[in-house]
Image (cartoon, rainbow, N blue to C red; front, side, top):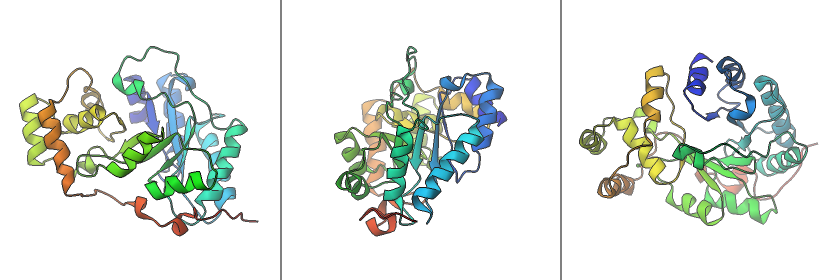
Length: 276
């Protein structure tokens, strides 16, 4: 909770949590410790899919609100297309949104940093790790369009087909693992550009995401890196170096799992059935 509170005090506007991370309570505590008003912090959380389907997702949402000590969460997502009941869970969340448990969020404050310009998420129901087939299935089932799709985004895993679909259909792309879980932090190409621009490799990777127009959520356990990771708004990577970084994606490499490849049956998006 202390590190999260420090991040908020330093001006980080968004906190990404999830049922699976088991830290929703810490986020709620951190918001209070920081002295920030609840409406000044954009909180994302996610349901870890289970066989309980609609009942499970609503129970998870209620626990989330209790842990946050809040009557709303700014953006709530299905964590991944898995366990066979995402269709019914998504419909249940849509109903919960109508009841006011998911907040329609707008910022009236001046948007100082680039990242804040990407936070105009006016709807509050999203998905995570959904591939194009899953997004298309939501539409075919007559379900509301998600505001956001949270997917792995870094130079080695650019998910260009999903990004293209999202942008063509007005779905905001939220990129996780922009640092590739530090598994490529010593990459020669990134290190060379970092040296040229007098920046750290982490700053280069975060800035790459920003210049591509993604909301990006770098993760750190060190307070000093909170400062350096945020120092990415008053400079730019030259086009030639952006092209070099883009080329790293020609040989697709993932730093983590890839649920975007799940079948519609695995996701429960081929049809909607309801558990009794």
